[in-house]
Image 1 (tube, one colour):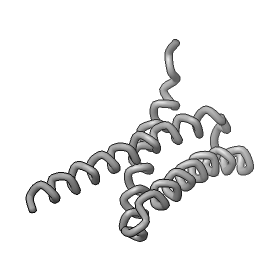
Image 2 (cartoon, one colour):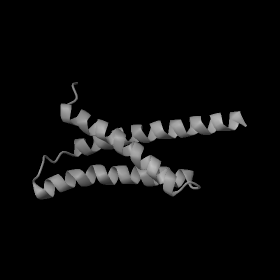
Image 3 (cartoon, helix red, strand yellow):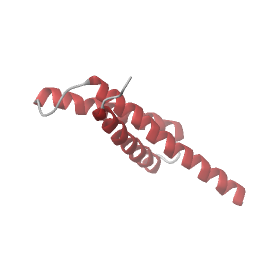
Image 4 (cartoon, helix red, strand yellow):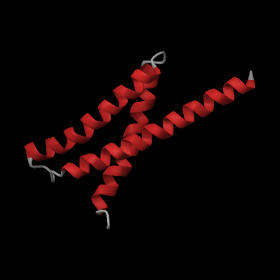
Amino acid sequence: MKIARDKWKHFYVGILMGAILQMLTFYVMPQHFLTSIIVSFILVISISYGFELFSLITKKGHYDIFDAVAGVIGGSVGMGIILFLVKLFIIRLMIAY
């Protein structure tokens, strides 16, 4: 099964979106690790679907729910990358002391 080219675009944009949102929520809520992950994920879902809903309402683009799904999957990957780097950095910081 071949994945459509535009789905890959949504996936890659989702990675960047998820990474940025995860870093932003860590910055805004540094003492609330789990809450920042949940808020980031909700924002990824909202933005991904909101973009598709905007396309449907304004007719400025093509509405496809699977574009939103690809964005959410990419956003989850981006969040995971940041979570991995944060955990790696914290572990290295603890080892250094």
